[in-house]
Image (cartoon, rainbow, N blue to C red):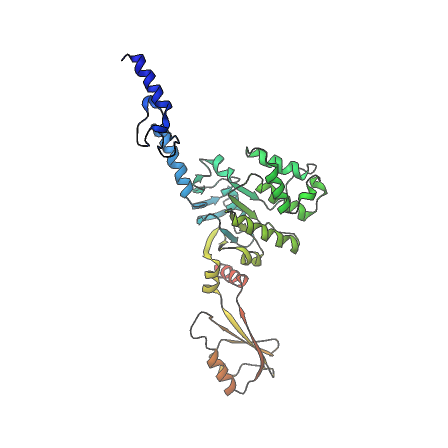
Length: 368
């Protein structure tokens, strides 16, 4: 057989790929195939290609967001972030709480590539936000605090342009659904300058969703909007989470975090002082109060009751007892016995669980 004949045979073998077993080697660089499916599998002989495959596999297995040793010090010497370490899972709603100037917006800005970190690393779905910024930013959406827009552009033009900035092909069906979810469809041809403040806030969210991100940052998304719109946004956030989108929410509205978040993070003076499951946080740090409405007011708490954690309220018409609701020994039985012995009668009673706001205020005060 001549060299030419050998070449012809090799070509014919390559074309009949459906008969080759998966384990077989390709002839003259041909692609091996799975004998059951007939699908071709590419061979990656070069180190560069193999490394790329490993990186993609690592990205799939990685958490949605990972922050490690992140610090930010401005030229003025102000330390905005101090050694932030945080991991957020795919499909999680994470609420970041903190007073003004705590570092919430700075942290988001670093993750989104708006501000450069002084040290530390951030990865989004395994992609380094500095070294692989294109891939990282393509899966991140940001709803900023400030309303920045082209005043004379239409709503539709605004979100279509934003989608195009990320290199996404036109998808009118998807954009229509986004606008309908945000009750903006009827305003699609309206200029931005004609919209109310609440509508403009909705457009910011639509812009952030226009390129179908896997991670969405909401920086004070309901600031200055009415109660109805706030509820609509809560429902939208839940629906996004159900679709697998990871949500990071910063807010001053404690009830917003309490209503929606899976986990809570508290940042104060640039430090992440606590990260905890919401329910576990309530259980660990929450306390209960038993309020007794007295039949007759008291001016002082009797000496015989001083061993109980009691306070007078409502000008002496109420007696408030604080206790640990998770403890087996709440002390309520002993309190009621001592009240009867002291001749103190009450008309009604009620209990109250500490809210997330109470816990947040307590944490911040302890760090001040």
